[in-house]
Length: 236
Length: 385
Figure: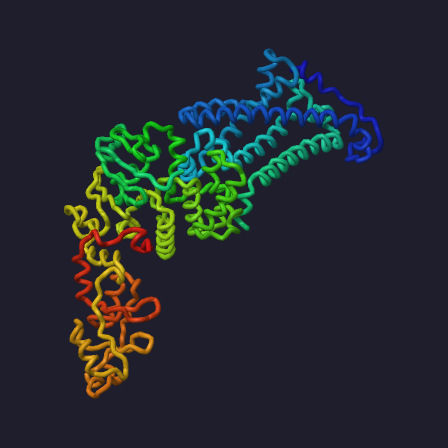
């Protein structure tokens, strides 16, 4: 623990607006001067951690959902296992994994993926279960194979719920990834804790995290809007 | 694909595991090519199960179903189903696909090229009387009736020789249902498909069916007959009750005025010699001559006063009402007679000229007619002529 906290070193607060910095105010001048050096790399590391975790989480949850869609008895066990992974505190998972996977991205991503599985899986299942029975019956009755029915009818119709799952998962993973530096994976969290008493620092790093969450959320929303023209047609 | 197929059930039985009673038991019947066979019965009689075994949406336990003499069990379900039109009560349009994409479902599965699919969608929209503008709409933007038409167009997309329809008009309000039924019969008079049509409504069965299979609890066939036969000679209490106490009236609904032997009308015109007029009356079944105008349209029943002189004069004892149209169904014509408290009414053709007289006696005679002579299904509404 001591070893881990040791990495949270104090940065020296150099740069413009010296008096503002000394007063621990909100200093735009200081932020502008330090932005490139202090925040750009952690920000992209944070994006990397989030996107890779959600992508892997989606891939695994998708495979699990397809499996459970065909073999309904698997829904219970899968929900329970992913549920346990979801409730485990991420910090605890980081420490549990350290002896096995060591410090770095891998450890952080494993923990974040484990966390996102339940959210994405549950939304996938809800989406597939909400596909109208008569649409499935008509599809089968017209000669669609199970696979064709899945890709042409069930998944497109489940898209709104699937996207909702991805939005929740991505925004929460952005938040959790602020702890990834405990696993030695950096990110905006490292920046926040590097000088947690300095308002300008915390506001900038924290603000970037919020911005990232909002941007990802908006991106998924836009994708969904583009991919589901039939939902818009309803009101037209 | 071919025009229409012959469908044969050969002692088909369906048993679900864990259920003592079979859902369908030993069902045997043949549907000739181009005819509508209605499976009708109370809920739980196995009519839908019987239909779903045809395209193997439900697997056959015992027996066989032959399509043009070929067993459906020998074919892969998905391929078999692409050759059989399928329309269900809730229609089951894909909400995420436009009307055109919905209709194109089976053509795409069969790998048709884009241009051919586009042409076919256009043809089908016209066939089911849908505005070409609906092509790019989504199902949620359509009315119930329009959705139903898209469902029928989709089932007809690759011109299948057989169509399965499970209560296709079940979710439509009564007024639109009547319209869609008539439209569908008009369509059928053009396309002449073999159709298996499931309903719980005996009136719909009588209207739509060339043949009706009445099914009862336990999946047993109670009677398989033409609508007229069914109404005239119901076999057993169950069918009798199911067909209803008003089966004579239902039979009258199957026939049109043009289908029965009308009385010859003693038609007279003003100014005609009275001797000729009296001669016409004595030749006919009626007591009074019917006065018509120069174009042969009915004016009214002449009274004795009009026949007193040398020439016929315009002296009416009553108006011509009710005037019955050749295309009216007998039930409506009977209702007109009853409403006007009269025994007979002049029958006119499309130009309004009197072609005969319909009387209560004529209607009674029609009820005793040979069921073979009573048309059914699409033939009744849209004769081949």
